Length: 103
Image 1 (cartoon, rainbow, N blue to C red):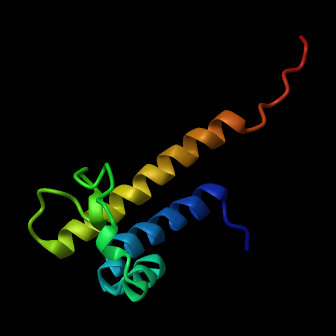
Image 2: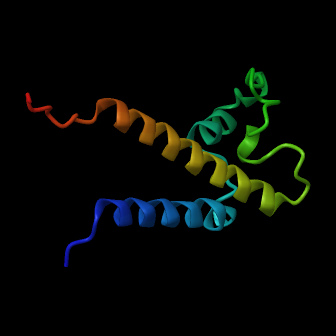
C-alpha cells in the first residue's frame, strides 16, 4: 500500500495538532532540568525574566485567554501551525525544480 506525500503530511500535521492542542494539557507541571538544578543549587533567586516574557505566547500559553487549558491548547496549535508554514516555505525554496527541456 502506497500513501501519497500529501496524505502523509496532512496526517502528520493533524496528529501534531491533536497532540499540541489536547495532550499538551497533560504535560508535567514540574520544572524542567535547568530550573530544577537552579532550585537545588540555590541560584534561582538571581534569575531574571526573559525579554519576551510579556509576549503573546509566553509561558506556554496565549495571553488574554483566561481558561488555562484553552490557552495552552491554543499556544500548541499556533506553534504547530507556525512550524508547518515555515517548514513548507523552506521546502518550497530548496526543492528541486523540474528540468526544462529545450524546445
